[in-house]
Image 1: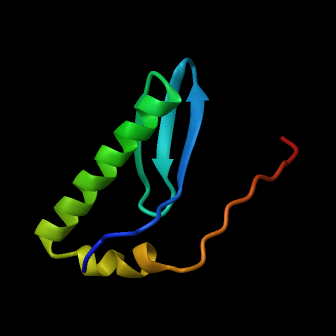
Image 2 (image 1 turned 90 degrees about the vertical axis):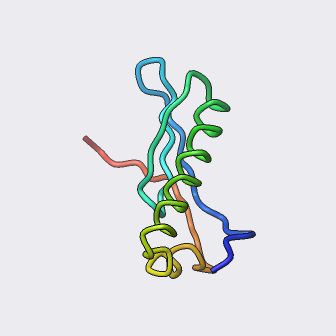
Length: 80
């Protein structure tokens, strides 16, 4: 499976002065000192994750997640 043009969703949030980034589809996380750093680091983490999946022969198991044409994000408020 070629991975060109695969779009993934990344959430970045600030936690105690560190920016945490998480790829929603793959449940891969990273962090950085800035939002840009967190984005760079999550991209590297995703690339390593997919490379390992390829080496382990399980990349095809991720294909439905990676190729889904419908992705939606939303922000909701709940009472806590």
